[in-house]
Image (cartoon, rainbow, N blue to C red; front, side, top):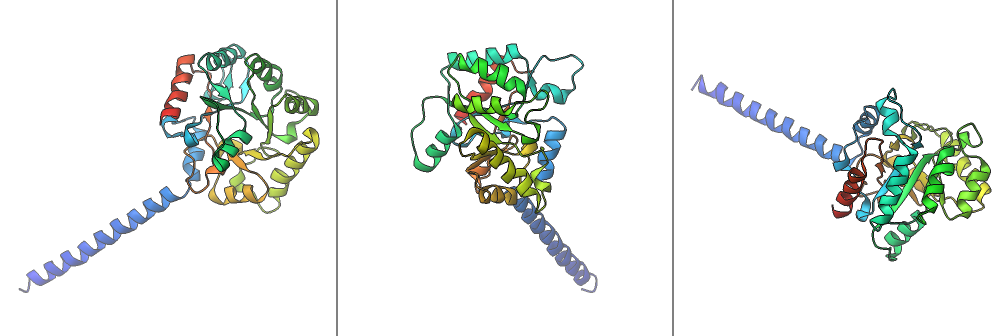
Amino acid sequence: MFYFFPTYKWILINGFFLFFVDYSTNLKKEKKVAETNIQDIEWIAKNNCINHSKILPIKNIPVLCYHAIRKISKTDSPKKKTYSVTPEAFALQMKALAENGYKTISPDQLYEHWTKNKPLPDKPIIITFDDGRKEQFTIGATIMEHYHFKGVFFIMTISIGKKNYMTKEDIKILSLKGHTIGVHSWDHQKITQYKKEDWNLQLDKPKKRLENIIEKPIDYFAYPFGIWSLSAADSIKKHGYKMAFIVYGKSNPTKPYYTVPRIIVQSTYSIKDLLDIIKNKTQS
């Protein structure tokens, strides 16, 4: 008995300790699932590891995301290749979407569908562009017109009128032709690092400036780098935006209007790749 009791006591103590550790670990895992893991999202963006199996457009409506439309060089970094497509590839992609029956919708239509259950056309798709680069206007919008497609252009307002970026007149023309204009911040800083004074600079002033240019309300926002947080989503809503778009991960079920996922179209995609990715999203 002298030797058994301490051994028995030791087993009880260690058993309780292991149970406590396991319980604590599970709590941490549940908390991690419930909240956005910003570090993971940043790592994915930084290391060019886009996991398309984890990108789920809400209610099966795919949203494409384009950046640069330009020639691709063999010396381009993987990051540049990720955020670029050639003009020829873009033209073929738009042609393929049209031939396969896809019809572009606006964020307004998507919002009305979600909030009021208004019908959408068969095979709806949203085509977005980030940063406000000039070729999105001269090449992207021009090619889309051949197929009666409309896009969403998220503008980084610090660059308006600068070399390789759209002018105020370009933005106005896009709006008059039926495209949607949205905000992509003032100077592309991570929203998770905003301080109190940054919200006015990065959200309010760009919104007001673009509204003055197109003489229409600006209701949509795209997070710089696609990085967001639950508190940022709340702030986006408070600053008068109806929806906000991310690029990595799934929509957050508690903030669906402010975590709309998008598919970054990469230079390495064939037409089949792109159509398969879109098809997988609409069927998931």
